[in-house]
Image 1 (cartoon, rainbow, N blue to C red):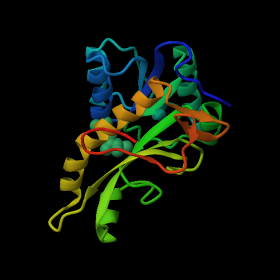
Image 2: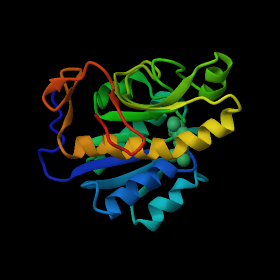
Image 3: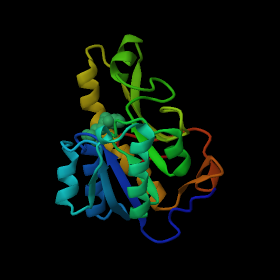
Length: 226
Ligand code: GRF
């Protein structure tokens, strides 16, 4: 299946959050500044107290709070989220700190249209506590990745990455502090490629500027992606 996401004018995206929402804010700011030709049609949070809801409200973006606690199981919750996404007509779904694993029915339904920001250089350190695990392993560098969401956790094709060196005195907090602003840039730069039609998902493979993407794009610290 081809997703020519740019074909119908401004790309429509939904953003799923669970917490602070600093990455949602980065997207909102990039839309406001005119950098992203993106219509954020809906924000979905599984937590009513997520700080990011305030950013959506301030930007007049429709919000759905769909608590997983109100559903019998994962599939029932996923299905409720999926119905809201269908109604919103979102073409791209961005997981920006959405702390729920999505089931296979959901990922099949939105095949190739869901991307996630993960704080590691995938395929290394899938799952949680990525900074501490990287430190314990003595990694010389860490980073963040944007990948396509599939039914296997943090295992879909990696689209783009940013890297930082690990210093001798680093701990998880200092790594998070240094990487956070670069994660924002990485998400905006990657979504920009979808908006411009440079990135698409074709028959299960990522295509960048009409070439199969064999290696993840790399973002420099000034936000340039290639
Ligand atoms: C980011 O660090 C991202 O890598 C991870 O969750 C965090 C979300 O932060 N998946 P925020 O809610 O966007 O501030």
